[in-house]
Amino acid sequence: MTGTARTALWIWLWFIPFSFTGCASLNPFGTPGGDSLEEDEQRLWKTVAEEEKRLDRSGTLYDNPAIVQYVNEVAYRLIPPTMRSGPLTVHVKIVKNPLLNAFAYPNGVIYIHTGILARIENEAQLAILLGHEWTHASHRHAVQAFRSMQRQSAALAAFQVISMPFGIFGSAASALGTVGFVAAVTGYSRANEREADREGLTLAVAAGYAPAEAPRLFEHLKRDLERRKIDEPFFFGTHPRLVERVDSYQEIIRERYAAQSGEIGEDRYRRTMPPLFVDNATTDLAIGRFELAEESLNRVIRQQADHAQALYLLGEVARQRNAEGDPRRSEERYRQAIAANAGYADPHKALGMLLLKRGETRAAETELQEYLRLAPDAPDRAYVEQELRKLSRT
Amino acid sequence: MRRLLVAVLSISILIACAGHQGDWSVVGGPQVIENQGIEVEWPRGWMKFTPANSNEQASKEGWLLTVTRDGVNLQAMTLKKRSLEQGFTNTQKKAAPDISPLDLAELVVDDLRANPYYHDIHVIEHSPTTLDGDPGYKVVIRYRSTAGLHRQAVHYGCLHTGLLYMLSYDAPQRHYYALDLPTFETVKNSLKWKVRELTSS
Image 1 (tube, one colour):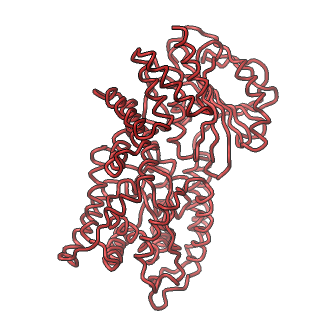
Image 2 (cartoon, rainbow over the protein chains, first blue to last red):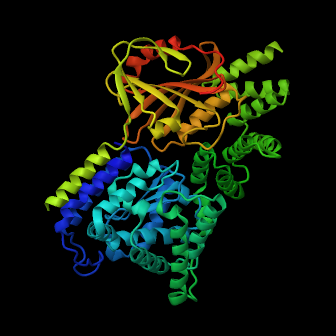
Image 3 (tube, one colour):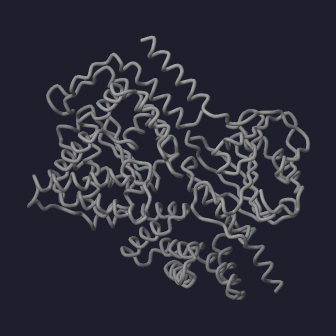
């Protein structure tokens, strides 16, 4: 059975006990009578604990301590003190995945992809996204969704999961557990999503952030998808859902925050995030999403013009894309990377190979020798030595 | 209630049996792989899985077969063949017909890096080699599976008659990788091209 089919079957079996569960309305956590878990909710949380364990063990978590701490500080600032001691956990985990995605488990733990963090422009936008996700947990949308789906028909849900068009990176979606799958891929009901927009924005504004950044974030993501002419498998990577978010936030701002300004935190975000921009761009480059990789790397260069790794990777983007003017651009970037850090081995090899292809054998030889001197244990040493042997015979 | 139970059971069976995925058989000795222009000597007594023609994922990946002794999670030798136009499974990048083995190997590694099931990939070795005389690549990687297990894999590949042939061995890094690596190297050295001028798959 495929992973997707297993997910579907699991959802199917999971719902059976809910046939007999009542559908009483649930108070949000942090409100009077809202902090106790109902029986089916307790089961849901146990499932979530297992799913989280599996995700955390999988090697997908991004572990740059400064960035993880920063993102958690933004989340912590959002959560009212009365909620911090309740049953929910204020914890954000970053997943190494270039696709646009963020989701919250019912226990409050939020998972956010490097892909969406690399597109976010400032701290206010991050806070708004985290506020949206936190509201799904605080307002118990997961258990409502599971009960409602059971009522509508578990069969329909299962078959929708099977037939969902994932695209080439969609297998990441089927690696999630059942609860994570619903939170990250299908999303919740339109009413729940709008509630998450409204309550999440309330949290962000109360924490001092500018509400006007909410529609800007989703407009930015929407334009990004339109330009690439592709939908991604996760909730925040689908065009209709982004259009809904933009409309919904614009309406909320018109109604509640028309004259409200606030903190944007662009500098802080740009100062903290460059290592993540570089790491995410490396994955985008491996996938062949050259434009996205280039955009992220240019953000780094705008922040730090002599960032050797970003310069080298920009050279790689140009070399691999090989469009008009790219060979010249790649050489320029490799040389800038070497100028920024002469002890960095990779641009020497890249430049050596480029010069070799162009027939500048002596200059190529110098660069390749320098590469081996700087990286004597390079995994591709045998290749480079082979090229050097060929050169010595010419 | 009875109707619900019947529905659950029937659909569960339907999901479990959806599509014939392929066949298992015992292998051993030299084997000419039908219509693929290649001969490989697999270790005696191991089990071979041949994906069915209807297996869409297998067709997409150019997956010809996988051989294992104790189960694919413990050791798997896999042979794939695909045209360059077909591209790779995860990376969107394409290989030009005159691509060098070095660049080809980089594409193969990028394809693995773009695979959400492979985490923390480290390239341990990336060197030139030959497959029955054709220049190719050898890439050894260490990675973590989605289940969190540390695994190691060696990938050989080359272009032959315009087609990309890939032979790999993948096993848990601890104990199993070293255990069957010599067997895999014997398999790799047994590979022979049966058709020198094959113009299409």
